[in-house]
Image (tube, rainbow, N blue to C red; front, side, top):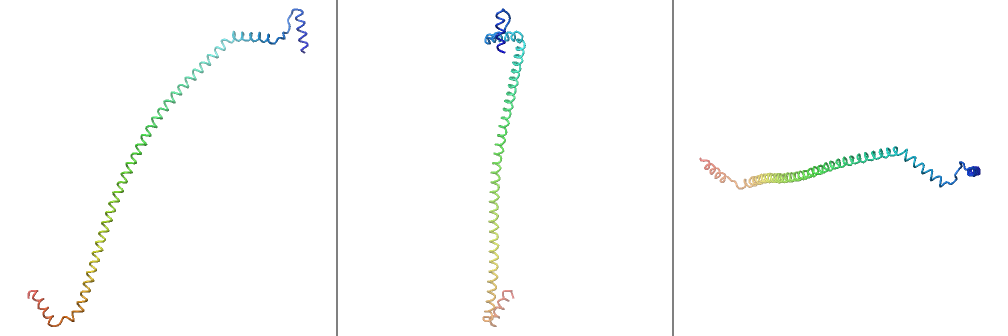
Amino acid sequence: MVDLFFLAEAHSEAEGGFGFNLDILGTNLINLTLLVGILVYYGRGLISNMLTERNAKIAEQIQDAEKKQQTAAAGLKEQQQKLAEAEKTAEKIRQDAVANAEKTKEAILAQGAKEVERLKATAVADLNSEQAKVIAELRQRVAALAIKQVEEQLPQRLNDEVQNQLIDSSIARLGG
């Protein structure tokens, strides 16, 4: 097949007619120049329109990105303000809790002190009551023992003469 091309070229050169040029570098350069020229001439408007549209899309995307960035920055600022307010509120709640805990502690301590005093007073009252009971019981026992001893010794010491004297002194005291 290649032989056929060589024959056709040789024949065209000999007659001065049209033939195949097998110089690839030279023919490619010419072809590329023609192609670029045609593209520039006919494709200028098309390429220009495509580039203009692409430029407009890029500008629009940049504007959208800037708007989103501004919106995000505003949202961030708002959230930072909310965070600061929440931190202030949390600090106030913590301070209130500490104050309430201190008040509760003081109230519990005061109530505990009152309870201790009440228990002391109750213990003292119970002790005094028990002491009074013991004293009363001791008095009763002493009186019972004294009466028992008197009853045991009375018959030995009390004779008729002492009885008469006792009766007379009792009558005299009564006013008789």
